[in-house]
Length: 194
Image 1 (cartoon, rainbow, N blue to C red):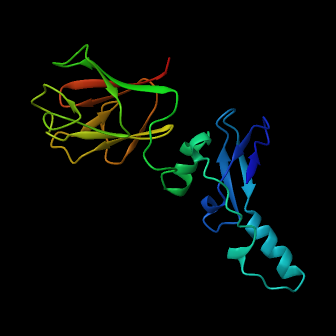
Image 2: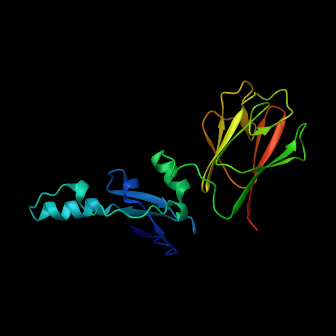
């Protein structure tokens, strides 16, 4: 189905399955950041059918299969937070270059390009290997789901820190987000592919 922001009138493709059988959902517009409510068409049709006395199976009403266009969906972050589910399979975003720059520590000045949707960071056997004895072998991971970038601590001994606080849950990264593992400070960078 196509939804439209009530504030800026931007239009997006939205998969009806993401309603999770709820009559409505609140969505944050990726363009203007306004929060607006969208209504599940299956509920509206079921209600109308019930009012006219006809009983319909709600699972068969309005369930035309729309091609999966979550790749172009500009609001996976808001939706992921509201449903507790990740919006799409791990996938690198089109037209973007993702990198990790080492700001402080033994590897300061190094830049690692992220070339797959899930990268591990650690002392050895990781995709991004750091010369840091305070870092666990498999210390942390970054998972990319198009425009949602999530940092995970992999049960490391010394922890993963953002703004001086140890993260216990997955943490959403943005362009220029900084985090620390061991004695190393890293910055996550998103740039346009040229």
